[in-house]
Image (cartoon, rainbow, N blue to C red; front, side):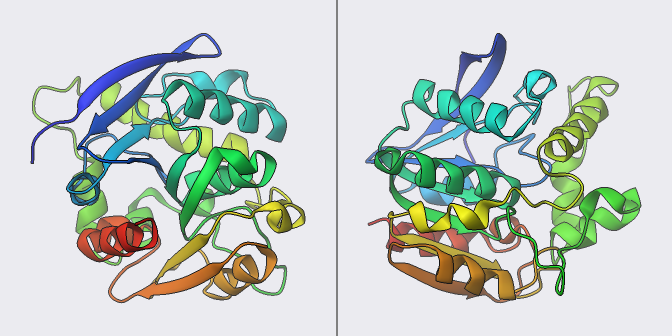
Length: 260
């Protein structure tokens, strides 16, 4: 697995990492809970057919401390809009997972021309009091891996300190990613996105891991029902909340087929 090209853009005065790899039409990806401290097989699968561009969300690995100046929903939405523009993704297909999925949906709703086709993997943004999502910030650290992935070892490998990394700074960056997501979504993960779903006209693929322990499967239908554009729901067997980590080939194939 070769490394991607790494670029840096400025968002609200903070340097922000943008990965780029592959060739063909652009396809953006916004990471889910915990971010992407390293390049993963899922992205390589996408890059076999597309130019994959992966901007880091504020505060996520590669996003420095950009979340520290984002105080409300509007701040987050505008920051991500600026990030996508500087990454060259306005008008491109956009895939996103979990926390990133909520923000990708906002982009498609508020700026319809900015997203061609949309693929969302178990996105946050909705809340059903009768069937609440699991709060990942309320969990013991040793339980998080099993909530994020059907195979906890995949999450542990993603978060393990790589050879040559600063062993002090690395865990700080991982904790900062959780803090950034909480700053945007805590306590209920409810951004009132349901009100804006009808504004989404982009054809939207909704992907859910069959073993997702964070987002109840019924949320997929709520998203599909609310979005005005064409939708399809795809369930991935053997996958948890971050289905792209558990089943990289299957999830990538579904996204590539949808955005072809």
